[in-house]
Image (tube, rainbow over all chains, first blue to last red; front, side, top):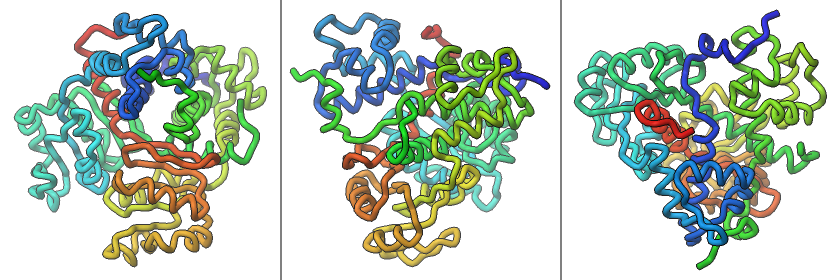
Length: 225
Length: 225
């Protein structure tokens, strides 16, 4: 019976995974943006950690890696911290993305204000369906996949958003990578195999629904911890 | 200058938050399902932790809370562990949801196989737009919000999925709660205020795009840790 070990991961799922610190920095960022919106200009590491369920020492260690931004007894300046985290995450500049698969989810993403507010712009659309090629959505023309190399070069798209059926996802990923894309946001189920140096983030909308079900379940059962 | 403390959270964001263990159990579950799919029937706590960036001791502690499922030197049975986690998360039974706001995202979610595969069914649709009321999507009729109480009672919907504009989200949440819904999955930006006993999970699609941008950024910069 074969027991799985992490060194098998390279063959199984050859994609880069966000380290835990990236996830924590994203959580801090969300929380800090909420605090700023609600009019709180300063926060302590212990308050930030407590609200997120992250140990105080871990918060201080993570934030120290960004530079010494906190002052003992005073805490962190929320706006400074937001700038520092966005800079560390490489999201203090605009990023442009090509989207492949122009269905309902694509249309929803094209109108999703959150992307634009945070500096993410969809600059190119592709679809393999001849009936969709030539359509215009939110000011963008839908191109056939065969034109990926020239359109991606012309638009300067750096990221690829995949809203295609599961069966098409590996082919589309290969085409995007061949056209110069280095990062893929995949909404389809299943694993994408990519060469070293290419990043993949898979979005599984079920995870959040499961968390919600658990919370509701918890409301009427013994807590887990 | 007011410094934010977690005890202010009740007024600011009076919603239940998934504890860290829920997030970790969800991560274990995803990973274990991948291992089972790839034909690995057993896994050790250290392998599972290493692949996810979670300490071995933490993994063993989390899994011990589900009952003593592992055997020293042999590890955990992947299928058993999946069952135990799904049971602990309360997702070993079907959950039904009412969806409010029949736009592009709603249409995408209605066709999202991941929900059905994991036991989540959308059983009722609502929209405030008279032009959409009466439409049929994937076999479901779109009802006006005014009929929420009776339709939610009749369908047994337990969760609410909100795909409405940000400005409408608080009103819709209030209506769903009044109709008996105890958990809300919110795709709109902004904070929903809910009474004690009601759970909210906010989906921010930008988080994953930021993680991807960071990974691509990391490929061409000094690593953060």
